Length: 449
Image 1 (cartoon, rainbow, N blue to C red):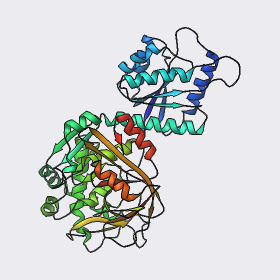
Image 2 (cartoon, rainbow, N blue to C red):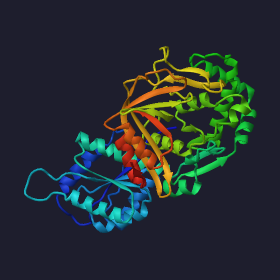
Image 3 (cartoon, helix red, strand yellow):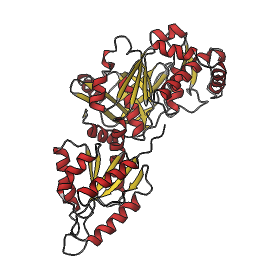
């Protein structure tokens, strides 16, 4: 499930010579060089967009190359009349990059910022999602901002063609997780595919026994301690894992939410959490309790080249910390080292004593981002905050972690989130990514809190 994004570099100009064409050509070469080895793939469009015909040709070339987004440059100022053509022909979001003036001489060399400002103001009036960056291609801060902008606009483009699955419905009473397919489509562009729990059970039953046995061996081969159960019991987890994986591949699902309780543990004798953890560790965007927006949030992060981590309850808080806990979904990316006192183990559910969950502490002293996207009557919203993990003060069975916030009062943040209608699930992701998430939210038209 790859995350590499592709951006078309489209250089705009004019049919007649304007400003310092030699400076503009040199700047274009510097841009190509600086974008040749980023975390995303750059496609330098061979056609320079100088009139209606060449704009259309350049966009066709970028589309044929499978570009997720466009980076539009005017290393010398273009014609403002080309902006509406660009907006009409390219349906997705774009990045507008203004490059610097020549630092010497008494003549204006490019007017790049002026031309970019013109395109940006028109994009805002045409309701075209965009990001705007200004700076030199050999400046580290500029390139970091270009990276964030490319990732954000490309992630939004990919979300617009995504398909998210829902098995069953949201968990009983979790009305705040209800997913309306028309709302998902209207605001995110994604398609919601709905199927029943019986379809999953049928798929689990129809699996080839040899495949199940092979996967059981692979599960045991993970080397996680198995607590208070016979390893042979994990065959049911292999059935969950293989059936969900097959469903996602057959239906081309980019993300999936599963209603796991109360039915599944009673129907199969086991919770599906070990299977969900394995899938998440392998790059699949899967969530429990029918949390479709949680799954879409994980997908958005993967599209942004962010490891989603895990879905959690906001269990409790004091002034500076939040206890992040859930009933056994500890991911490899944030867990205590294997073999340590609180490393991951395959265990029974803390409440029902049925297998199989992945217990473990979240390791302290790691930078993390807590985030959530959710639907509201007027569209989608985002909450994203940064912090660092801390050691829990008491042992809890399940996934047990503490996040110390950077500069936020947890009481105030909780009050803000409640009044904004945010559901009780958060995603905890390794690394600090709030700025990138806010950029993506702005491109999507989300409100941020």
